[in-house]
Length: 202
Image 1 (cartoon, rainbow, N blue to C red):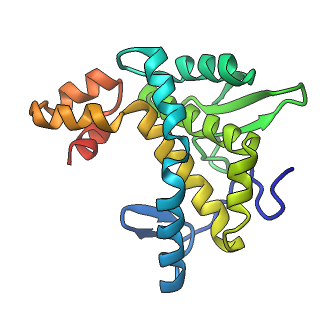
Image 2 (image 1 turned 135 degrees about the vertical axis):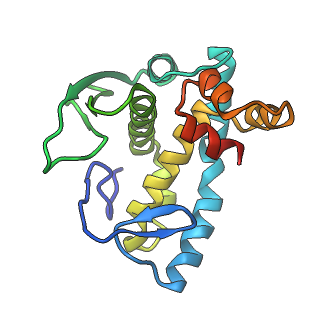
């Protein structure tokens, strides 16, 4: 079974993005779309929680890297991967994208090498979650219940929050807040940018 209404590998480059609760979109949402969007993010956000917890259990202490996670999904699901770096041109400014290679359960991530290492780590994890989504029949069935004009946005947001949760586990960052760790200390601990650490601690 494959998506009938959304191509996860499609990268849209539209102008005049808008923001909603800190999330950037390629076009504005109506009030009705906002409610639907929030509902489906709430419903789908926990979908990969157990998978991420199992990864943390096997990987041990942070920092958690995309290399660790790619090894994990290979061992867990038999999904193999490779990464190809590229230097972006102005007409292809995305952080990364992915494709099945044609070999069984094998994919490649094309990665923007001009970005800092911390951002590249998140990007690969984000793309890896798209692969899992495309492989996950239950997830695909749920996505097909969503209005077509919101599917890609929701798929993207779930990939992003899953990638961030993989790098910064909620239970650990809660303890870091209690321990009054500085953004710099958190950035070092999780291998993330100081900006992302500041947001995580807020």
